[in-house]
Image (cartoon, rainbow, N blue to C red):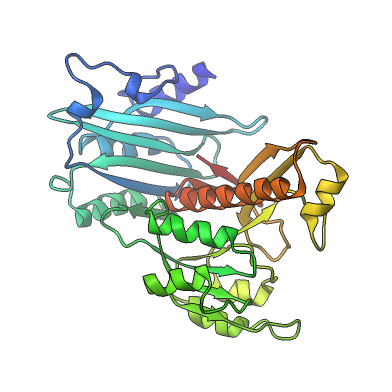
Length: 357
């Protein structure tokens, strides 16, 4: 593995040094700690690149970063068995007048298919203006006939606009609202949509009113799921989140919306379907429970997986603690999936899979 990495790095950039995996903060700089030499003026940016594979792509992208003070230092590599493709995540830095940290991670195809890369970096906005950054990466995208080239600077660019769809269960919805309030999730919640009529004095409604987030209740049934009304509300969002929304979105809805939708469900499927799956699993004496967050597709609960979490349960759990553990997993799994998505860590892989760095 290390030989493969050294060959790839040497081919693409003479400035790359391959080191053992370790924390960046474990690196020693004479006389100063990491916090002392990191400039407070540096901010964080991300670049996503997808193009036909050819020699020199990594070199050109790293050169672009290096010309502004960045460089690749370490790399983590994953090579799928029997496939001519490797995935890397590396941490670049430069020592000029200050320390510029940068994280590079992505998919580099060594065959003649395509190359996908995600570069995460820290830069000085006084030296690299946001419009100039767009121009620099646009030139690279034209050079390599890129199918996709996205630049994002979280502290300068608008936050992702999302709408949250939820049914009666509150645990995932409430956790997302508090994550948004505490700024743990880099999103702007524009609306909460539900097929459950919550009372005016409930915790959720009071929270939404206090923060000026509209709540839309639609009385749905098998004949009318109010999808046209929902589409009208979410047309300007960047993506949707289903926080235990117990309605199946139709193929027409998915095609009309045309953007990503992230869902969460418990990890008791497919063994325990229908009503009260937690009690079914508890009665069956399962020892391992989990949660899965995935993209929504027309195939029910079979979209590409973004995140999964598991936890052990035992004979010492009663039904209440069993359910609480399951709900906690769902909250954590959904929040992590959203955060990974917003940080552009989720890359498509094959037909129905993802790479998540």
